Image (cartoon, rainbow over all chains, first blue to last red; front, side, top):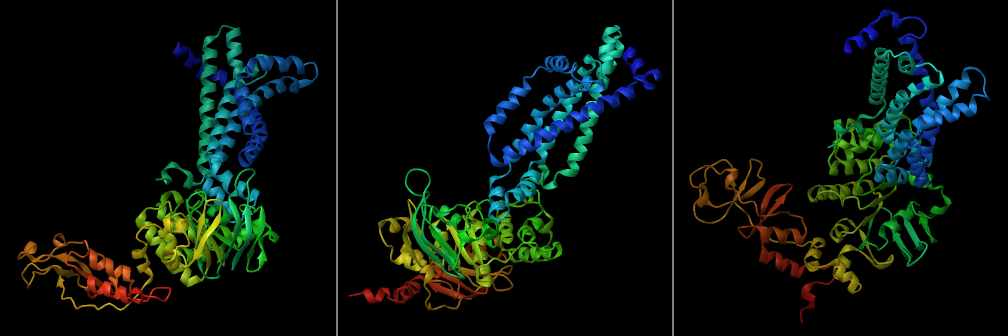
Length: 229
Length: 368
């Protein structure tokens, strides 16, 4: 079994041309990044607002847990059924998947940003205000930099979720590594299915490593656990 | 000068947090607000830089009504130090201290020069600048907090329980340094504490507040100890106030010559009388008993360190304490750290009897 999976993974024929492993990996990444960027653009401002002002906390917590209960496949089918007749071309297929991925990607970012801002030392916030920083200055110069570790962990878990779930885009006919799973199952080629699954896992890990490197670069060393007593 | 005029802070319901408080904090002085929890001292302090807006009344700084100045602008001109320092963990010590100058639009180089200057001033030289707050002790963090408040050279500084969270030894050092700094810079300081000893040590003037933000007494520390206005103040000022009041009194006390023995050398004298050991620079190290030392050179293991040391020009309290705590009954007195001689408890007591009290009377006057 392992040998056949390995054979499939290393077969040169699977590494070139349309629908090859590199091809589907790029497609998978493209979908995932679009979804992450859109999710972040929506979730980060909301998280910042709620964290900074403390307004709408209860609503936010409820929304986050509600979102986590969303059945991805169900939403995908509903979105596809509703949108397919109304949109044309590639977008008609992509949009339903993107909606699912964005919905799924938002909760970790929301709670990461909100929790990050919330856990900023109250004394530091008080001092910032007492020194004459305006609300915007406090947010961008104190709260956000101090929240970065949790903001990053929100983004990373969102990214992992999105990459893992992007495989279901194949169900509605899109590309991505999900193709190997769906097509493999349809053709009873289990080596291809297992190979595809492994590729998704490896991709998720590699992207997470990239984010970890970014985090190291972006977060102040003063916030690293080693800098504390 | 900071002037609170009939300032009241009333939250939605219930009794006011601060009720009709009128108070003047003199320019170049340390004014301490002290009182039990719930007395509105922190609320009063935070109304000065408009962290809390008063419900009614006015607050003037050098004649300027603070309500007329935009809050952020006002706060940038007022130093602000809080209990847990509130340093920014993501910024180095240097960048923490540069904060207010940068907010005030100073260039990076000028702000950095100034930051290094004030760090030096609070006793954190050189490589502390590059560290992060998480790498400092509580006392060091609080020093950075003071440096950060001083960086823009404010004429007014507000301090909210600045040393309460620091261990007692570090606290004493911080208090001494604050007194020194304030003496050098002449900053007008309003400081909040719940610790009456700290209030008495630091304040030129002490305002005792009672529950509901009402002023119970506002006077000099010596006066507070000598003449508590009512039972509440007397109770709050606490025990030992007769003894503590000696901190503010000085009087000539005879200093007897003391023949010390050097550390590291064998004794040339015998007997069971206590002898004072000093180091090469004549600084007192502790007391020894010849019987315990024998023929060996006097070592640190022989020292009895029970006695406190008073300065020649110290308060009567310090002198009396030196005499009372000394195992030999001879209180060690130093001048600039170097042995000056010893004092006797009975002579300090005689001086106490003769010394003028802050209100001009002396104990002897009251004798029939």
